[in-house]
Length: 291
Image 1 (tube, rainbow, N blue to C red):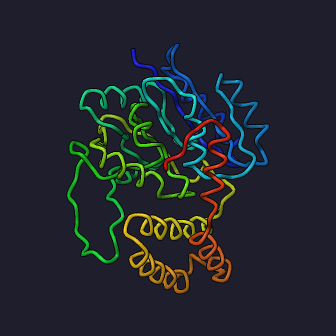
Image 2: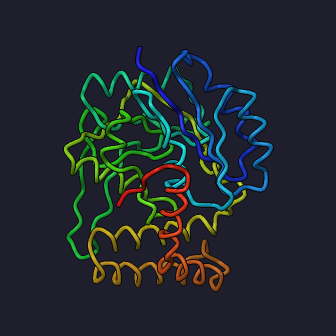
């Protein structure tokens, strides 16, 4: 039987962690493990107590390094056949995750995700397109779970450990929201396949892995992530155009109010050099970041 490690990242999420770990345990095998990484939370000790109660390894990072870097730290000492990155607000089990691992093994995929729905039965699109350059003509891509896709929902992903290592893990250049798209692009460029297994469904409302974060912060941080992705993959001219367009969105849309706060967050995030600090922190925890 294949072995699997679940890595989950928590930021002020102790209130959802117990339910997550309790559900997750169904189907857990003797070679399976769980790693909980707390990323700069005030409730870290509560999360530690919950993690230890469910026989999970707990790793605390004193500052909030974001999902990707925290996941790298959680995966740094893993020696199981498969890795699963799962947000603590996702309702799933080891049985489900092993089913995804079996599917990945069957089709030779480098990363597989489930179908995703909320508690009301509304399905999100599990397969995702990548982020296109604003300088390129956009096109619609018709994909299904039976075919290779460009990217999948980052809330629940299963990968052969060797593929995560080949890709170099998550790039610390990204704080939140596009780190999985970047990882998937590097996997596909290395010859790996990304897919969705229609036979497995998980439930999530979203936001539970960082429950103290408000919606205004989240939508602004998504704009930051989009520009940084464009910058990395398409260069400065494309990123400048993307930057200006997202600046217009922040100024015009009510979701970003108060605008002054969102603008400050946007400028600070796009121009941030914190990725260097995240690389240093990653190395301190024994993980080698993407380079």
